[in-house]
Length: 366
Ligand SMILES: Cc1ncc(COP(=O)(O)O)c(C=O)c1O
Image (tube, rainbow, N blue to C red; front, side):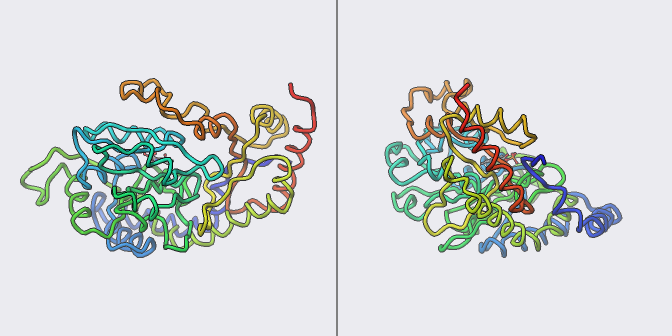
């Protein structure tokens, strides 16, 4: 029995008729950009996250750049960002005119901590991007207590809950990606910014529409970056199911624990007070590449997402990033491996994956 890395099709299958109707509604409406579906989704997404505002944008990368600019980040500033993340978390910073400064992660949680952030702060630090990697959540309140505003990169954390509220409502602002494979995904590119600061929300709305508040005069150089009506309508069909899907992801993590996977590899650890809706279920082992080869032979999906961390990527050399000493990042980059995760991954699949891992690691290193 093979086990795929993702399964987006099974959870969506029962929603097919509703999705078709939502798409037809938009096609028939003749309104395709910034119409009633986007407005309704923004209200519903803000209510879900627990913020006063949500602003739909074209993707999660634009969401980061726009939110940082709306928070006042600009030329001459520094923005602290983890290196162990999807490249876009850092790539979105230079377009604001600011410089990315890389900080380390705790390899057990894959998230930044107050200590790793403190080591990267300078008098020029204007904001911190706290990435909620793999669906886990960085300790935002403790990080914000360092005295610098936090932008949550919550692209991977839809459906996660914490004792302090949902991600998206924990920092000064937060950004989302609705890329199709995300916990809440549309049928193309899509993104959003959430915040309870109405001035930041207003600036995000202005920046997403060419830097104009009134669509007549252009005071700023902005972007053409909107969530479109079709994607908003598709997201509105899915949103009522997000919590059930998140429960399924948590249950899948529990299936791995019950199958004994933690006896052979290091399992991801939730930060205290966090109940992750695992977007990716990422284990660690010194022999991660041997494991990946064994999984491939048995039809089990796996992927090392960030083997070369962001601060070692050629494009970041211009920011002196390669000099950063980030031992937790290097450890996570070397040993991590994403294994199958979806809202419908059951105990049998978790046992299968665990059996393959156990067998592969019992064999001598190749
Ligand atoms: C952590 C993180 N940040 C930012 C992004 C960028 O989002 P997008 O692909 O929608 O631009 C992604 C996903 O792709 C992500 O995983």
